[in-house]
Amino acid sequence: MLLFAVDLVVLLCLAVQFALAAYFICLLVWMAEQPERAELPALPPDAELPRVLVQIPVYNEPMVVERAVLSAGGLDWPRDKLKVQLLDDSTDLTSDIAVHAINRLRRDGIDAEHVRRADRGGFKAGALAAGMALDPAPYVVVFDADFVAPSDWLRRAMAALLAEPKAAFVQTRIEWGNGERNWLTRAQRLMQDAHFAVEQDVRARRGVPFQFNGTGGIWRRAAVEEAGGWSHDTLSEDLDLVLRTHLEGWTGLFLMEPHVVGELPQRLEDFSAQQSRWSKGFVQVARKLLPQIWGSAWSDAAKFTTTVALGQQLVFPALAVGVVALVVSILGHGHLTGLFRFLLWLWLLGMLAVLFGMTWAGWRRLCRGGLAHYIVTAFSVPALIVYLAGTNAGAIIGAAFGRKTEFNRTPKTGT
Image 1 (tube, helix red, strand yellow):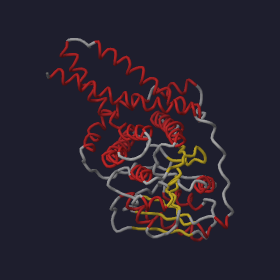
Image 2 (tube, rainbow, N blue to C red):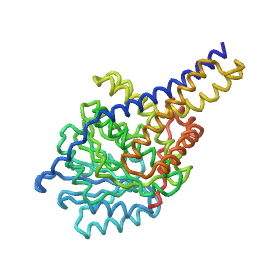
Image 3 (cartoon, rainbow, N blue to C red):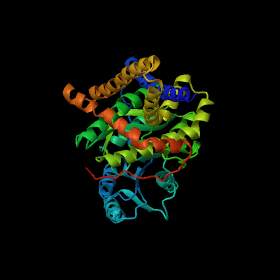
Image 4 (cartoon, one colour):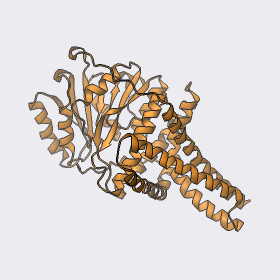
C-alpha cells in the first residue's frame, strides 16, 4: 500500500508537468495561427488627450530613483495633462535624492509630486492605491524604479488604449538593459523573451486573460475602481487586479512596441528571492480567484490557460517531490517500472519541445543573435529550473496553504 502511494505521488507530479507542457504547446499552436498585427491607431489631437498620472513606487532605490523620475518627466505628453507621482516609502538616502529629482522636474514646468506615507502598509499595492487617491486622472501609468521608457512611449501606448474602450490596461514589452551582463542575465532574458514575445502576445491576441507585469503599462481608472481597486492580500497585486477586471468584463492589450527597459537580477540569490516572491504571489492569487474564474462565463480556453498559468509555479515542488518519490519507487520495486519508463521518455520529449519551442520562438522574433549563442544560452535554462525547484519548493507549498510573507524587493544597481 505504501509503495502504491509513492507511485501515485510520482504520477501526480508528472501530471502537473504534463499539464504545463500542454499549456505551452497550445500557445505555440496559437502563435502559428495568428494573423499579422494591425497598425497602431492614430492618437487624437493634443487638445482631446486625457490627463495621465505617472506613478513610480520606490522603496530604498538610491541607485535608480533619479533616473526613473527624469525618465518619467521626459515623456512626450501635453504638460498641462501630465502628473508625475513618486510614491516613496524609503527609509534610506533614496528620499534625499528623490527631493532633488522632483524639484528638477518642477523647475522644468512639470507637475511632479513626492508622496511619503507614514508606513509601508500594503507595500507596492498600498502605495499605488494611496497615490491614486490623491489625483483623479482617468489613466494611470505604472513604472518600477529601474524602468525607463523612450519619450514617445506614452503617446504610442495611449493610442492603443484609447482605441479600445473595454481595455482595462495596456502592457508593453520589457527589454533588459543588462541582458548580456553574465550567464544568469542571458538565461533570464531568454526566458523573459519567451514570456513576452510568445506567452503574453499570444494570450492577448487570442482574447484570453494575460498578465500585467507590474510596470511598463497603463491602467484605466474606471476599470480599476470597478474591480475594487488595488489589493495587497497577495504578493502579485498586478495579476490579482488583472483577473478581477476580466471577471468584470474588461480586457487587456499587449504591445510588442513600444517597449520599456528594465534590469534583471545579476546575482543568483537576488534572482531566487525575486522568483520566490512571484511564485508565492501566483499561488496566492490562485487560492483567491480560481473559484470565481471557474464559476464565470469565460470560455474553456480562457479558464484552462488562466488555471495553468496560475498553477505553473507548482512545477517546482512537483519536480522536487517527483524526483524523490521516483527514487523511492525504483528502490521499492527493485527497478524502474515500464509505465514510468514510458512516461519519463514522454516527459523528456515534452520538456525539450517546450524549452526549445518557446525560447527559440522568442529568440528568433527579437533577433537576439546566431544559433550557437542561442544553444549555449538555452542549455543554461534547465539548470535554473532545477535550482528553483530546490530553493523555492517549500515557499510555494507554504503559500498554497495560506502562509503570508512580506513583499521583499529585488535590489537594483542602475546598470
